[in-house]
Structure formats: C-alpha cells, structure tokens
Length: 135
Length: 134
Image: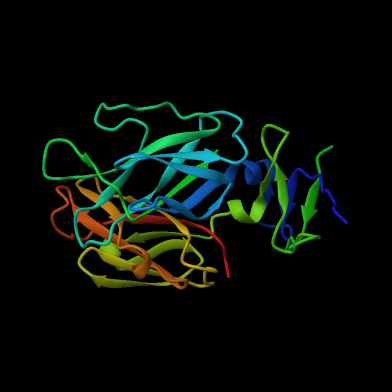
C-alpha cells in the first residue's frame, strides 16, 4: 500500500545528522542524462529526461519529463572525448556569441566546444555528454 | 506543527529503492534515490590527497593530469553522469576518456593546460556523480 510521510526534519536514530526535508527536495538533482553526442545522438540512461535533440554540430537540447518550477536551475556536467588532450567543455545556451537560447522550465539548449588553438572555441560533437540539473 | 523523524534508513514501501518527494511547486514529485548524488570528491595536492568525499574509497594518480577515484560502493552500470570542476584558473579541466575509461568501480578525471595541448596536474579538482548505485 502506498503511504505518505509528512515531516519537516529527518534525523538518524541517534538524533544526529539533521536535515530538513526542504533541503532534500531542493538538493536532489532534478534531471540528469548520460548520452551519446556523436553519430546517432541518443540517451544511454537518464532521470526526468524525455528526449535529447540534435540541433547540429555540438548543439543539443534536453527536454524534461516533468517541468521544473522555474528556469533558475543550475546545469553542470561533462563532455567526454576519447583523446588524451583537446579537452571539451559543456556550455549552456550561448556559444561564442552564437544562437544562444534561454533555459526554460521544460528544458534547455547546450553545446559542446573545444579549444582549437584559436581565440574562440569551436563546436564539436562529443562522444559522451553528461548534463545534470539541480534546483 | 514542526515534526522530526528519527531513522537510520528510509526504504520505499512498493519498491525499496524508490521514494517520491514532493517538489517545490507542490504539484509534482521527484524521485529521491534518482536525485541523490551517489558520490563526490575533493582531490587536492595535484591528485595526491583525497581531502573530502562521499562514497570514495581511494584515489590513484595515473600520471600527469590523470586521476582515478574508486568508489566504496560500486555503481550499477557505467552510464552514470559526471560533473568535473577545476580548482585552478590557469588550467582547464575535463573528464578523461569515455566509456572505456569509466567502470562501475571508478571514474577518471583529466587535467589539461589552458590551451588544451598537454596534460597537466591540477592543484584542486572536484568531482560529482549522479546515477544508479549497484
């Protein structure tokens, strides 16, 4: 039988390690995904992620299954490429003054770029990308 | 009235590893287990010291700019999500490799110089893991 527990604070049985349930609600990741970013873009595994869209080279959109309460969330993560050097970065929205988009409650657009030795980073598809969202 | 629940372990009723938490908007729920960070670490001294961590049993220095963090409790698969941050403004930071360099028992961090032309040690690095525990 399903059950619901309503409390303000959780503690361990010794009365230590107090944590407010509001902290749990706000501190848990609201979405994350481990995805293929090159060739056929696809979700490998995820939480609260309904789809990933391939918008072009190094350009993706992530759509949530359940929308967030607002767009003021934090995005972090990695863009991984199987090379010893030439690190890749995950960027939210704008890239090099390009076609940036504002994050929405339903999802956000992001890019993966690398430093090609020039004054600006260059977009590039990345093998494995792992964005995660906290709010 | 404020309430406090004192327990050591919380387990779901229908599914032991699945508990719903009402979201901030008071309308939807989020899965507690799916949202919890499964591991994090603060590695200092250019990869030589595990300063603080969650679910990290040990670290290894695999060479210049290459660090390995070994989980205490393994992940369920290698499809976990990583966020890596460099604690050095002079260098950039990214994860090392792809699936072949991740395992259920560990993940790797790679440091590169500002031009990303060579691997370098980073004084402080921070790692965060989301995914499924075994």
